[in-house]
Length: 140
Image 1 (cartoon, one colour):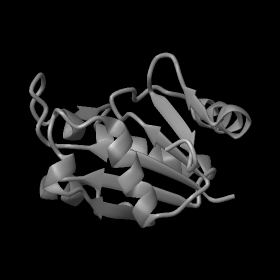
Image 2 (cartoon, helix red, strand yellow):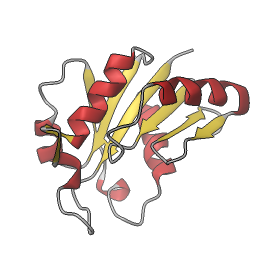
Image 3 (cartoon, rainbow, N blue to C red):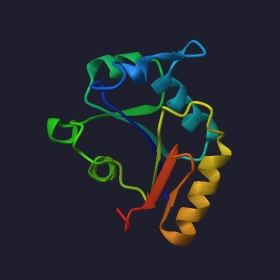
Image 4 (cartoon, rainbow, N blue to C red):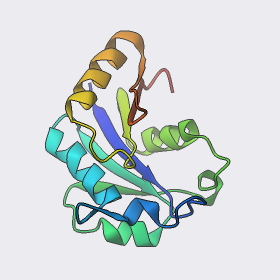
């Protein structure tokens, strides 16, 4: 079964401008998150979904990360995450999709493993805190 790991990152945060590219321990949050997904070696695809050229350019040095330009219709504050996840799977079909929220930079990769196992068993998993959310293709 193919498994896709993703980070969804918009530029337009109302609470903290440019938060996804702010450094944490010297590395932009979005870059750190994508690296964690890659380093876990659990995913067939690692995808960055973004509406921002700036975020895309911040991550351009990451070899193997797939860039998915998010359409304007999926780029506002009012859009929930599920349609964005569905957009990812439309472009990168997979049996399981796992999204890692880059605002939780200390999340251990074991959370990815546990989330995938729970998703295989129950169809969906949401970690506490809400760093990782995964679903089967059927659930989405």
